[in-house]
Length: 88
Image (cartoon, rainbow, N blue to C red; front, side, top):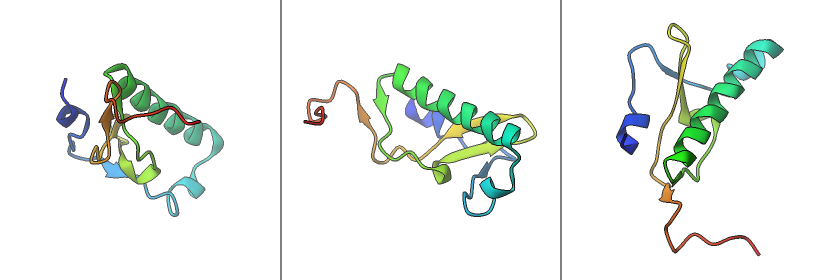
């Protein structure tokens, strides 16, 4: 899959607005969505990509399908990129 695959906007998917949406979620719904977000990050990392701009607004959630997508790969880098350094 390409990066475009992960950034595909599907009908019915909405960006998560943390100021509005996250405060109205009960604990179970919040944890479920957080788990879906973590799965997206894990999938991208497994493909050798470092997103570098993880925030709620960069996730699309389709409640009908229960699907989450990570979007906005403008700051991303390949994990094998020599310009990525470990923090000292």
